[in-house]
Image 1 (cartoon, rainbow, N blue to C red):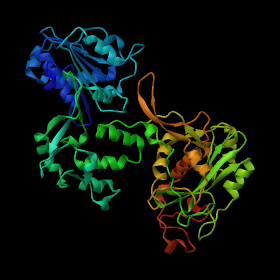
Image 2: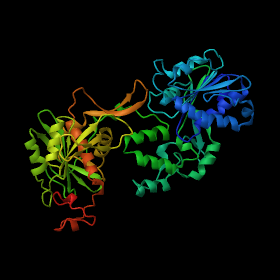
Image 3: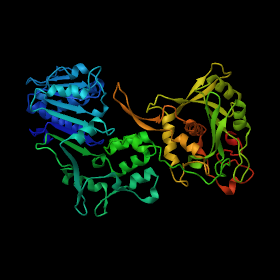
Image 4: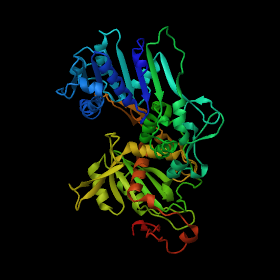
Length: 547
């Protein structure tokens, strides 16, 4: 706000996390511009709808609550054009409205959440460029950009990096007095609470990177009051005309160190949620997906040989990817904690071969009796009618599945729809959010072998299986119409060999659909007895999971 009154400064950028007060800073600047000057103000929001909401719920209440502004305000103003008795005005527009962005001259220009703007405004150019054109007639213009970041090429991060002067907030340690920026890696919690998000929230603290002393939330307000903004780059210009500020939610008076740790633990295995934590919590851009390539991943292998079911993993799930003249299939055994073990995989050339694998075959276990497949998901995206008829023939085991190609970040892990046509009695089709399950798989395939929830390959698994899994990687996809950026799984080549990645995805989803998360923990003292039914009624013997 001090820089807003500096006559040399033309551009101010705030790359902030959530709950820092960045919108309040903009409102204060707007109030100053309206009261202390007689120059027009424009506020640009991502959409017209948001602009209307902000005018009604944020801007006009602010004006009415400040006496000097209230005395100047014309109550007959329109919702998106606020007039004042001194002849001044403020317009609120959406970045999706080209006519509003290019219809008048503006001295004070504000952008809110610019990383959510569309790439183009209607058929016009970039909405930020359109709006900035309106300031050319003012030599003392001010442009303020505010947003949480998204990706490195996003508007706010580029604005931060391009500024003549970049600043971060330094706070003194209450113990040694050395000033430092608050960093997520310095948030600590007791080792015995590892993985327990609720206990971590209650016990997390900040460790000074210099004296290593414990800093608690009770120290934060005094640290903030004594802090100061410091430049973190060497300016390469004679006159600083643009300045940018970076601040994470670790600084927020309303967010505890435990809150930050809790959000990290809850989101770390879900890339879409982890991206939100990094963007909104740490105010950092999501690194390019190319830096997170699958090519160098080393997948976890068990000590159990091919074709053998681990003793403690009684639930067998199969999945099939259907091709024009053959099938790819895999069988996995599941244990307590959603740990899974690849038992076998391969190709089948006919429906009869598939029947032998899915329905008739028994899979030997390490020490107990052989197991049979409880549920099998069969891809119905190709040869659809054949798949439906086959599943109708073996309804106690086989279900049709189909990948959802919408890539919607709001889609559930899977959903069911009814199939009536051509199937006597009807059937349920499972529509699979493939991006969700690929995130799930890759997060768990690189875990240590002894950790709960790890996805294992069998001992000495052929490289063929891993090559199928590495056929795709996450990429940033920008919608050319809306400008929205999403992170999606995409093939590395135009003709990928990814059939076993598909079977792995379907397998994880089908296991979830039958309640694998409720599998009881294996107890060798009781599970080796004749009756394999546990206290909850689950029976791990052969196909007795549903009995």
